[in-house]
Length: 150
Image (tube, rainbow, N blue to C red):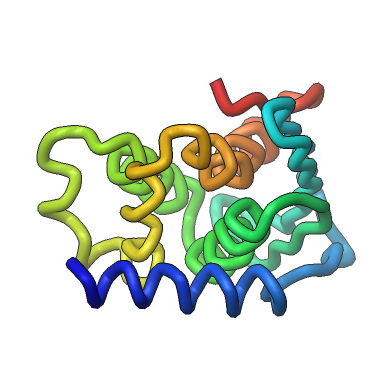
């Protein structure tokens, strides 16, 4: 478990300071906006869907290192995936950070995202880690409005 904690800190620091896909892709045909009122994190996510496949994705926003790192790693994980695959990743990620029973059995399928398991030790930070994911769901469903972490 100590290795996972060290890796968690390393990934959060790296992606928080140097987020990947921190840009708006052009063209894009979906957009989501998210806001976490508890700590003020805001994110706008834009993506390009080609049929059912996410061909490009990027985000801009402001917030804590956890929200920015989570968005960064999420965009890396979903690029090239289908909407169904992105939905499945969201479900696995959410179950893991919420500490749901059996969620740890699937660490391998989450890849680098598994380092966020440490967030569940800090319940107030779970919303930071899931903001980008809720915003992704909003964008994929083309719902408009603002995604919430509830």
